[in-house]
Length: 326
Image (tube, rainbow, N blue to C red; front, side, top):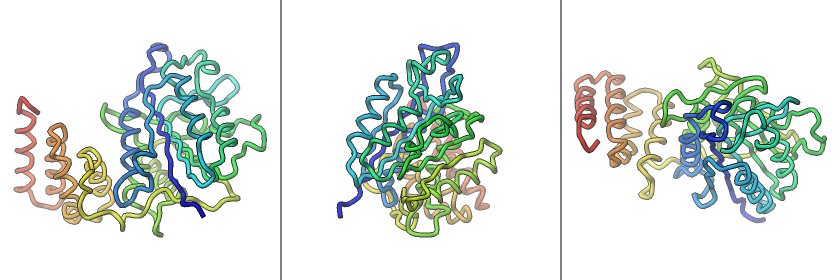
């Protein structure tokens, strides 16, 4: 039997210059796609090889459609495909979902957007037996739910996890450089393995984790549409496989992402400090991240009831902020 290959297409759109009065710029998608890439390829837990993950940022409608066509049509039978989208989701007058590209116009979404119908048709024609769609956009629960979609497009081997009901909006990041809540919770589950109980994080584990976190934060209601005829699929290994020290090829940004997710799932501050020290030190090698790393150390030691150590890291952060080269 051929070995399964995990492939991902991550589409993110945050700038919409052709429709300044209709589609507002977004803060989260620029960071969302990179966070998902880091989570999917994280050493020890990620099932995706970096060369099998493509990030498509701020592409126009034609570019997105071409990338989707190549992604689904070029797949082999034993491939597992993951399509991720972060950006605006818009409903047309008939209640059908369209994903916004760089040149999409809200008042002409049927002709300028990327219709969910077109995506579903590409998936149905793909040879890949396992396909997973992760949508971080408003009205994303409308994916595949339009009443006039042919029955055969229900999607054998297709799993969909959407950030909201079809009638709901999805919260964007609050500040530039931060991911949206939905994507942050997804990456958190993929890199820490919580709440998985076996050796792998499945789509069921991911849905349960995101749904609980979104409910706790009072945000939109994630939706799932899983193929009942096919067993659940694995998306990542559990945290037991995470290396105790960062891989030598890991970037400082990736190291920081993994550290933040490990902190979020740690039992207490002291255990968090022990488990993430090497990751934070790797991240601190990047001058652009050093101040954030020092503040993270400060908060961890405060939580661990070590105020003197916390103050030391706070002073380091303040010195970095005052430095002309920071």
